[in-house]
Amino acid sequence: MKIGIADTTFARIDMGGIAIDEIRKHASVGLERYVVPGIKDLPVACKKLIEERGCDLVMALGMPGGAEKDKVCAHEASQGLILCQLMTNKHIIEVFVHEDEARNAKELAWLMEQRTREHAVNAVRLALRPKDLEKLAGTGQRQGFEDVGPARP
Ligand code: RDL
Ligand code: RDL
Ligand code: RDL
Image (cartoon, rainbow, N blue to C red):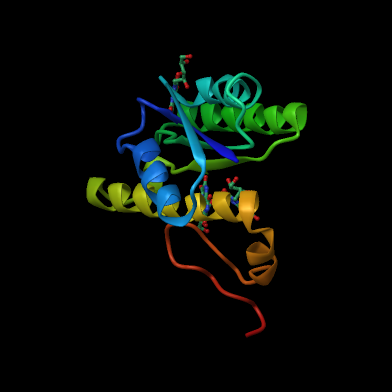
């Protein structure tokens, strides 16, 4: 089992390093990292991690900026990541933290780290422990900020 990590230099926190640190806590798997300038470069990085570097699942990590053009860019990147999943029949866990989800740099750093760590656990579950996800079905999980929880407790 090999997990790919694709991340960007645009992000304001080392999301790839954090993802690798978290995955190592939960599983003994091969890891391949591929760093690109920005989120629109992630789809092909993921495709190469899957097709050329033998990854079974990839995490795509990035930080869309707060401007309108960044949101368009994030939507385009997301479409590319979904297309790549359909082309390769492999999961890509998209970990995007929009810069304007946080009120300041300190909260942004916290959110980026927290969402990355929680989705790294999701990546391990998808790759190795799908039954763990089944147990969490319909429980209102979120990554980063607090879980919302089930509507019928
Ligand atoms: O291929 C080079 C760049 O076009 C690519 O890296 C883009 O993803 C860079 N980029 C933008 O051009 C932009 O307008 C990024 C953002 N916004 C953004 O919000 N977040 C990024 N990249 O990671
Ligand atoms: O690949 C991991 C996640 O990116 C993926 O599971 C997304 O579908 C999660 N997600 C969002 O990132 C988001 O901004 C969801 C929502 N919004 C949403 O409204 N409902 C979801 N997922 O089920
Ligand atoms: O309702 C508040 C948030 O859940 C909502 O704004 C989400 O869309 C935030 N969000 C993203 O914007 C995103 O790109 C989330 C994810 N990805 C994600 O992977 N997991 C989340 N929220 O819980």
